[in-house]
Image 1 (cartoon, rainbow, N blue to C red):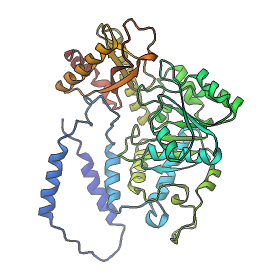
Image 2: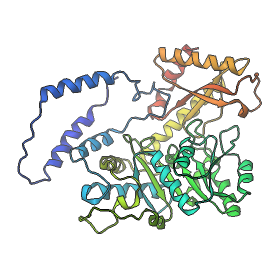
Image 3: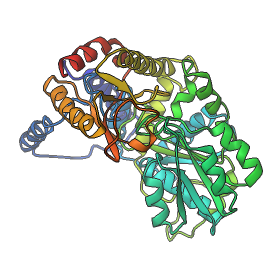
Image 4: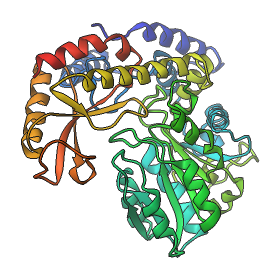
Length: 442
């Protein structure tokens, strides 16, 4: 399979268009092109030592290729290399960032908001928890034991109290366990994971909102992976219900570089109440002379940020707006459909058993055996055999304490499973090929 190269034609035309907008004297820029060619070809050779992340047969980790329009727009912007910290360094790309953040806020049901792009979900979640700590400085941050580990680590960095709450066998936050912690009155923020990275499970936001009316805490939705699933029409009803009330949370994080077809790193944090801007106020020794408007550096903990990320996301939104029934949503629905089809195949095969029915596009399964330790060994062997068959999966450790009435012996703390993130729309068309290679790997 050849790598996509049509975007090179787009890039050439875009650079020529960009250059025509500057009426300046010629600048003599001489480089050693022969030496540069030698170096770049060596770099390309080194980059061959990669898994084929761009191909549907890579069905393991959360790695999704950027859309050609995003790649071309990002590279075109690099000829300017804007810095979206302040308007002085991003006269064009800062307004583009504000526009795409407004698109994402609207997707979640917010017209009024405060937000910006970040270098990724970790930084975005850090800002959300930082604001939570400002509002409830003496209270705890609560997240499920299946939430991303970044929340516990961030809380430690910010010197905030953090606590985990148990999940059910589906990988969703356990409501009874959560309420027991809320009864103590020392919880300031509950992190609701809208799509865990392990099982793709969506926490019961609708039920957590009901608890909020009783116990008065903030809700932060970590939708870094699963935020775009709000657009889908092929979710099960209980998952739709969770996404339907996401506009009622206090803050949201989403990563366009996961499901949003963007290059790394492109995260986003959005707050429902624009008044949280007061926590960002700072005095700068620099004089920003370009605009009297609030610049992005005044509502961000990060300073220098790649304006190219905003340009790439803006171009992608122009081509494929993040709206229900649009091309972007339709492609994401194919990923969801592929996950359901793989689940059905796993369920009907005597060698496999799925851990949970997928809520999103992540499928996790084990290999049948007499006991969990042996089943884990089988999973490791299957993983290696699949790679020999040019099928690239990932491994996942599932706590055996959460297994629901298994018909095998539990003799280990974890069960090693196989896991697939079917993030590419092509995965639906390639599913039969993927399945054939799975069977050949037994």
